[in-house]
Length: 422
Image 1: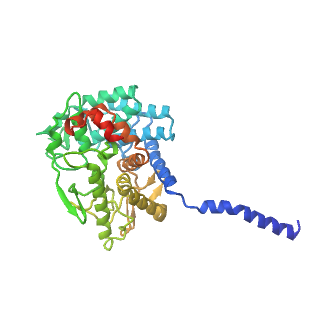
Image 2: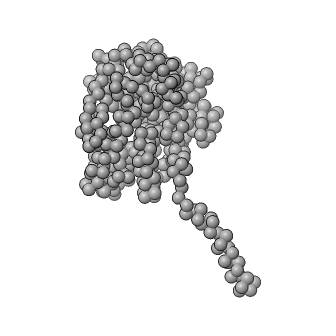
Image 3: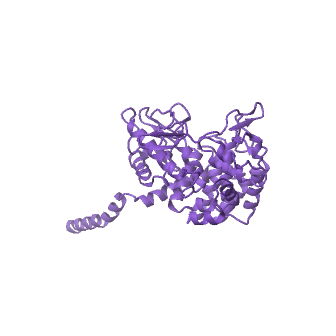
C-alpha cells in the first residue's frame, strides 16, 4: 500500500469515527438520566433478595437482615418494574406472591404487627428488635398497592388477609399509636403524637374493616407550625426530609384538603426550607451548596442518624443523602433534578454504583458510605415513578381501605375523590 493511499485511509477512518466520538461525549438528557436512575435503583430490589422466600434486605451490606419496610418499598418496586418492562409480569407476580406468603406463614407478628428486622433465611426476629408500627404500615402500603396492581389474584387475597389480621387498637392508647412493642418490656411509652411520617400509619389503621382505630385518631396528633426564612409549614421536630415524603409515596395528597392544610404544599415548603438551610450553612460545610442539599435520615461518619434541617431542632454534620433531594422530585422537580444531576455529573465515581447512588457522603470528612439502604432507595424510585406517570398514586388511591379513611377523616366520597384526582 502506497503512502498516499495509507494516509487517505487514515483520514477517512478518523472522519468516519467522529460521529461515534461525538455521541459518546454527548451528555445524557434529563429524561434518559431519570429513567437510568430509576432502573438502577430497581436493580437493588431485584438483586438484594432471597429468592427462596422473597424477603428483601435492609441494605446492601453483607449479612444485613430483612427490613419489613424495605419489603414494602420492594413490593411497590416490583410492580413498577413490571410496568416498565424491566421484569416480566409473571416474574414480578411470583416474587410478590412468594414474599406475602412468607409474611403470612413464617414472619412472626404480634396481633398482626410485624417485627422491624427479621432474618433473611429463617424469618426470625433479629437484634432483639421491636414490633414496629410505622414499619408495619410501610409494609402494608406496598402490599396493598401490589394487591391493586395484581387485582383478582392470590396476591390481592393474601394481602387483604394480612391487613385485616392487624388489631390496630392493640398498640394504641387514647387514639394514638405507640411507636413499638417488645415482649420483654411491653408497649413503648412513645407515641406518634405529632406531625411526622405516620400519616400513612393512621390512614391504614382507620381504614381497617376489621380492627380500626376511631376516625378521631386522625385529629389526635399535633400539627405544630413554624417558619424558616420564607417558608411557614407544619413541621416535624427532626426536620428530616423523609418525614415529608414517606406517606406521599402512596397517598396522592395533591388535591386533598385536611381542615385547611394541603399536605402536598406543606412538603413543597419543607423541601425548599431544607435546601435553604443547606445554602445558609455552606460556609460551614464543604458538602452543602445550592445543588447539594437534602438533609434526611441516613448513614453518616458516626453511624445512622436522623439528619435534618430547620424548622425544627435538627442535627447535621455536613452529611448529605442523595435520596433526600430525589425523594422530593414530585414536590420540587426542577431543583430536585438539578441536584441529582449535579451529584451524578460531579461525584459519580465516588457515590454512584450499579444500584444508583450510595446512601450518603461527607466531603469534610472525606467519607463515602459503602451501603445502599432500601427505604431511602425505595422512596427515590417510587417518587420518580409518581413524577413520571403517577402510577403508584393512581393504584393506591383505588384501594377501598384508603377510600374509607378519606371518607371518614377528610369527608371525601368516592365520587368527589375521582373528580379531585383527575
